[in-house]
Length: 313
Image 1: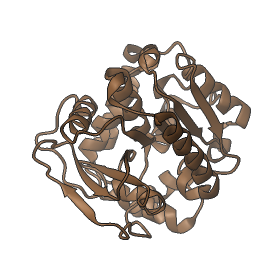
Image 2: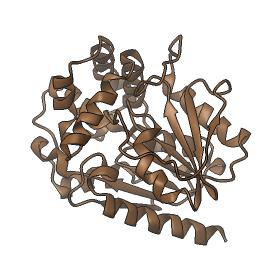
Image 3: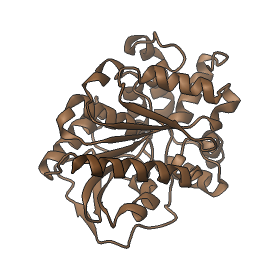
Image 4: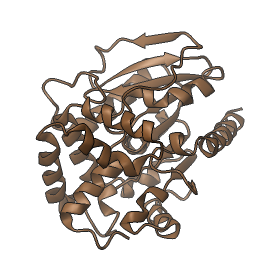
């Protein structure tokens, strides 16, 4: 898959798949009271708590604050306590100063600490793209801390999408090039729209995605991408014991040679160390599955949460 891509094209393609975000949520999750959690204990992110019930941690992807989950929160806040995460430096949220050298590892550790300090008992974790990667990293680091995982269009080692033999070390030069390119500065709106167009179908959403990307701190984005592309979680997946639902997309990547079969093969190979993972593929949705194919996304999530609730009894 994608064997025709040049190294430069691969860098762009990696950025396409990893760029996730919107600038303004079209609906606000305002039906339930919103609690702001103090930031001092976790400088890597902020949290809004909405609703009551079993805790669900919602982690967005690169360049995207928690408002990307607005419609999801509206749907589930009456039955679940939604802990909506916004990562520092993304979508207008202030970046950490100074920027940590091991950015994502710090996010992982602070999220695990947050779960403990808030006394959340095995919360369900839903992560999109970079957020899904973080969910896998959290679960493999401290398997007992989390409940079921829903991974939305994310892989345990993105750099191996072309070649399964890729290692963190061999991926480092490409990741370093990507970090330097991204950190150079913000793009124009036209260039940002072109970059994110394969990720979402609706034109208004493309504009939202582009605006949020423009509002993100370039150094933070570059470092987060570098960390993700040089961290291989495949060998650690066996530590994860809880149920895992993986939702994937492929339609947006047809121009890069993707088919449903080739994309499923990549996901199956990457998640081979996690035999309990169930992989489901949208027929039409692009990277933002909750935007592009909401009926399918919510049907999958409804069933997964119901199964999780039944297993907890």
